[in-house]
Image 1 (cartoon, rainbow, N blue to C red):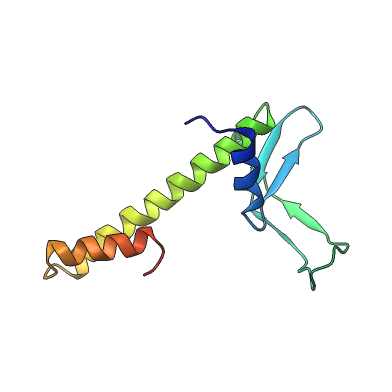
Image 2 (cartoon, helix red, strand yellow; image 1 turned 180 degrees about the horizontal axis):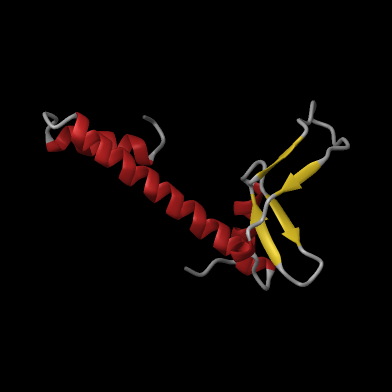
Length: 112
């Protein structure tokens, strides 16, 4: 899928705890894996942040790094939906297809 630069920046701004990271060697990554001290208010303050970036997450451009993070998030979401569907099928074999469709819709929309 093609994204505009605005869509890429908007996507990144909507995620809390993600960092756009440069390795000082021309590579870029977006990571949400790591830790930082908790910011205590709405005003900017000094924090310490550590991100973990696996070597296969580095990209040659900012755009590529954000797109890879979007793809990874979508893949993770689909895996979660698939897992939930499998769990529902095993645990609730007596549900009708209509009930399953309602539950799947709730899971997709994060209303479960």
